[in-house]
Length: 382
Image (cartoon, rainbow, N blue to C red; front, side, top):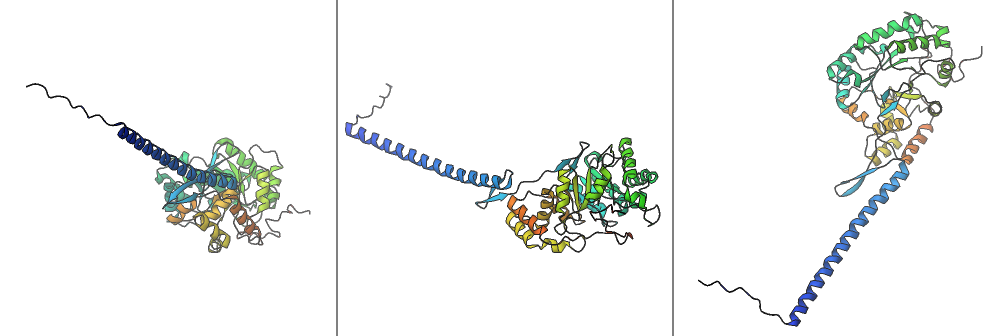
C-alpha cells in the first residue's frame, strides 16, 4: 500500500493573517495589563503592611510582627527578654513561680505544672515551710536540676554568722539539692536565734552576715547572693563595705499599688536587678488590680489578660517578676509576658504613680520596731 499523502494546509489570504496577528497582539496587551494591575495590587498591600510595621516599630522600639486572622491584619505583641545576666555571669529567668503561701499537697503539683509549662525559676524560702515538697516536685518533674534556677532565703533568726551555714544546709537538705542558684537575706532585720528578740547590732549592720554568705559562694553551696526588702538606704549601708560578691538582686514588693519609681530608677542607675513579689497586688488586692480601668483597656487593645498586662509592665520596668499561683491555668497565663507599646506602658506607669503608694507587707510593728522598716532616712541620727 502506498503511503498516505501528508496534509498540507490551504493557503490563507493576507487579510485573515493580519486579523489573527491583531487578535494575538490584543490578547498579549490585555495579559500584560492584567499582570501589571496584579503586581500593583500586591505591592500596595505590601506597602500598607510595611508602613504599619514601621509605625509600630517607631512606637514601641521593638520589631512587631503581623498575622492575618479571618482576613484582618492583627498586631502581635513582641515578647520581652526571657533572662537577665547576673554579676556572676549566670542567667536568671525573668519570670518565676513564687511558692509563698502555697500549701501542703498543692505546692508540689504547682511546681511540676510550672516546670512542664516552661518555667525554669522557682522562688522559695525557708520560712515558707514547703521546701521539702518543692524539692520532691523538682525531682519528679524530669527537668534537669542544672536547668532550673532555685532561690531560697535566710530567715531573720539566722543572721548571726555562726548560724548562716547551718540554715543554708537545712534548705539544701529539704530541697534535695547540692547548691542554690540564689540565696537572699529575707529581711533587713536580725532576731536572736530561737526568739523574737531584735538583734540591734546585726539589724543596723548586715555586713557580718553578708561576709558569711560570701564564704558560702566560695564554697560552691550558693552561686549568687542578694537581699530582699531592702530600701535604698539599706542597700547603700551594705555596699559601703568592701564586698567580694556584690548583691545580685534585691527582691521587693512591686505592684500597681506600690510601684516604687524611685527605687526602680536608683536600681537601674546602680546596676542592681529588682525582683517583684506580689506583682498582682498581694493579699486582698488581686481582684482590685485586675479591674483597674487602664489595665483592662490595655488588655482589650492588645488581646491579652489583665494579669499579663501587669506582669508585662513590671517586666518592662526591668524587674524579674514572681507571680504565685497553684491554679494550672493561671500558672500558664502568668508566664506569657509581652512588651507593651510605649504609649500604653507610659499610660499604666502614670496611673500607678497617680495614687498614694500602698504596701501590703510591712512587719515593722509586728517586729516591735520603733521605726518604719522602709524609712529612707534610716539609719537615724542618734
